[in-house]
Image (cartoon, rainbow, N blue to C red; front, top):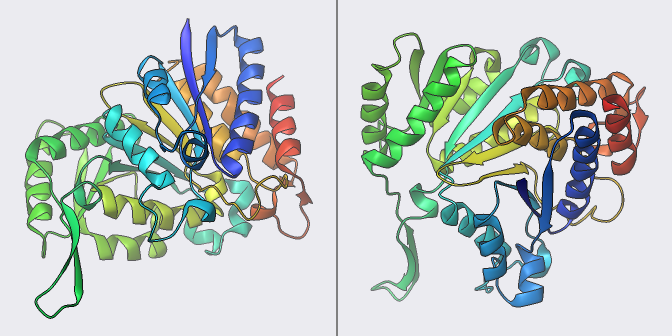
Length: 355
């Protein structure tokens, strides 16, 4: 029996996760999937209930599961520089706990949404790229601190740290995935400035020799950011370190009209974790305004990678396309001439298309 841990989290994470489970129920009925679901706490809701953004009960749940479906964490209630316990610590903690070192973010410019993008249609038509982001190293996990300098003023530091082994394993993932796509890898670094980037580039070049069929090029991160605006269709698989990947994947999400369309998966040595790339959006939580499609497309990734059921995954993606073909749009992707719907109605259209 496949064991799925569900962590709705905070804000709209709770809404879109519930809708993704509705889609999973439809897929179960159609394809005869066998699974059981157990729900746990993470983020701000976990802080409120236990004082810990990643409680021991949740740690036990996820380590004993085959995959994790997560909503979103965070919100102003738990925000502020004076807060020592923050929802985001739960997210970083679960990545470390499950050794989730590779984050996969798919950015697809759906034909139905080309006009909703701030980019010209001819610039983004056909864009279908995958960002492979290293997830457990770099500045987010390096030595950090705040201290008082000799002048009496506060100073802070965050250290970027990478080992050759950490770089090598993420690069292997990128090359393997490129082999299943259009066979092109773009490695993103800042090798003209950073020692960690120079090591990164060296390891990428070494690993590329094992994949002669994969075309490889290197870009500095600032140039890559520019190219994502000028010619995003040139990219197939981008691989980069943690902070660069965090920034570039959010930038790339705008190509596809909204963060509400961007799914992601985090894979590593244990159970994989799937989550929409958007945040908790507390300003619209509970108002039936959230776009559930990123969560639903994250479910498709779960079906493909963890369930190993490509047929079911394809069915979910086709159903999303069918809902968009009907002109249905949540507020984040709505334009004049399309039909404005809420979270539940959009999901209902996807479920109907599956059935």
